[in-house]
Every structure is written in C-alpha cells, then in structure tokens.
Length: 98
Image 1 (cartoon, rainbow, N blue to C red):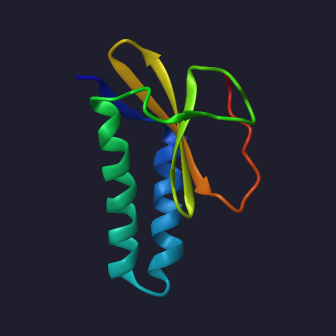
Image 2 (cartoon, rainbow, N blue to C red; image 1 turned 180 degrees about the vertical axis):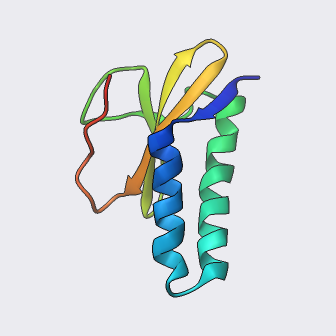
C-alpha cells in the first residue's frame, strides 16, 4: 500500500476549489472536494493507474482526470505518491517542477 502525500500547492488548490464553489453552495463544495480526495485514494493501491501527463511526457508525472478537474501527481518512490496540483481541465497546464 502506497502512502499519499498532498503537496502544499495541491492542498491550496483543493481549498481554492472549495472556496469558489462554496460561494454558491457549501454542500456542493464539500461533495466536490470529497470526490477529488476519493479519486486520489485509488493511488494507494494503483499508483500508476493515471495516465502520463501529455504536456510533460515524463513517466513519473501522471494524472487522473475527474471532470472538470485534472489531478496531477508524482510517483515519488515505491511507497509514496505525491499529489502535485489540482486544476480545471479548461485551464492551461501549470508549471510544475519535475
């Protein structure tokens, strides 16, 4: 079982998503963040289940697409998966340190 670690950037992304949605509905904001966290949960057992990020092309940087969001993560070691960033699919791919 792999350990999942959220980078400070990814944690801030989740908070920003929550705050944006909560302006209209706190209930939907909670559901959305819970759905994203749940999607990341599968990485504990299947760390390479996401696709390689096409903009980067490096096998260690992968993503899960949970419309309308992209969850970018790095397979950091045999027992650690680091969530790097979470953003809307309609946005440009952010700069991430490889």
